[in-house]
Structure formats: structure tokens, C-alpha cells
Length: 216
Image 1 (tube, rainbow, N blue to C red):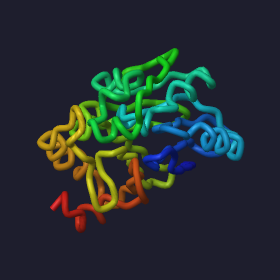
Image 2 (image 1 turned 120 degrees about the horizontal axis):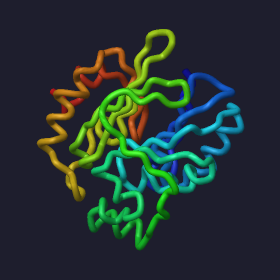
Image 3 (image 1 turned 180 degrees about the vertical axis):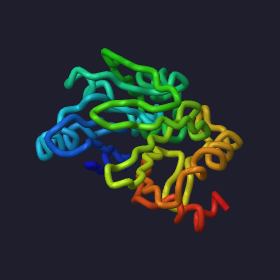
Image 4 (image 1 turned 45 degrees about the horizontal axis):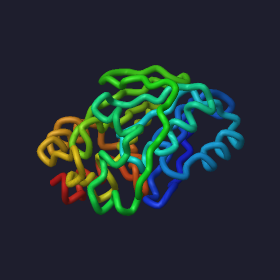
């Protein structure tokens, strides 16, 4: 499995391209603010063609380029219904402080939007397990994948970071829901699962289970 990731935009949100290997289809996960150039560069370098855009949640720093990328390549944006409105109304998901940073902004409606539901999603030759993890936003999800070699990968968005978890003080945030998502869903993943978060560096479930102060 091929995973290409890079941070983009003022909030340095991680965008990922995931494929079975080079020279085929891929999914683009969380194309946020300023991610288009990096995505196109990675597509050329690895000879990839997008099959879909996937959103771990609807915050601006994770979906600002979703419509542009999806429409350029003629694919759909996949997002939970609870966060669907944030694709075109980003300020609805930001508090006053972050709203002031972003400023007055609207995003175009993608030509095609598909609702994410829990369970397996088959795209680009990949079997992607969609895990609903509300708390950071009502529509937050984790994408789980297995490599051909038997390894496990989880793209956790802003639900889980290395040493931290997602904030719950923005509109739609729910600390009790996040605690439940972490306990019943995230911590049910195997310790050797590689975590690719929405911000910062990678980690593993085992490392976070042992040392993340928000999980103990």
C-alpha cells in the first residue's frame, strides 16, 4: 500500500493520498486549505488517479480544497451527513477565534457528494473501514485499512493525535461523545495499528494507549 502525506495551509492539516500502489487509483483524504498543489504533485510523481475524496470531518482546514480536487478529477466527496453542511459553510464549524483567523469565506458546492456510513467502503482497490467517531465534530470518522502484508493503518483526522486528542470547544464538539468514541472505537483497534492523524506526526495505537494522557 502506498501512502503519501503532507501538511498544508495555515493550520498545517495533513492531507493523505492512499493507493494500493503507484500507477493506479487512489483516494485523497482531507484535502484542506492550500492542498491542491501538493496533491497534483503527488499524483504526477506516483502516476495516480483519484477515485474519490474522503473527509474525516468537515472542518475548513480539512475540506477547503475538497470541491476543487473532486470536480477537477470528476469524483465525489465522501463525508458523514452530520458534517455535510460544512463543505459550503465553513464558519458554522468554527468558533469566534478561529472564525476571525479564517475570515469571511464560502466554499463551492462539490458536483457530487456521497454520504459516509459505518462499515466497509471499496474504492481504488482498497477496502476502507469507516468508523464513526463523533466528538470533535458530529460527523467525525476514522478510516481503517489493512496492508497486503497484514499491517494496519488508521487515518484518525482530529479524533486522535500523537499525545493528544481533538478539541471539543468548537460548534458541534461534544467531550462526552469524544470520550465514548475513544474508549469504544479507537482503543478497540490493535496496538500495532499505525495512526496517521490530521495534524502532527504518526504514532501507533499501542503507544497512545500507554502514554497519551487523554486516554489513561
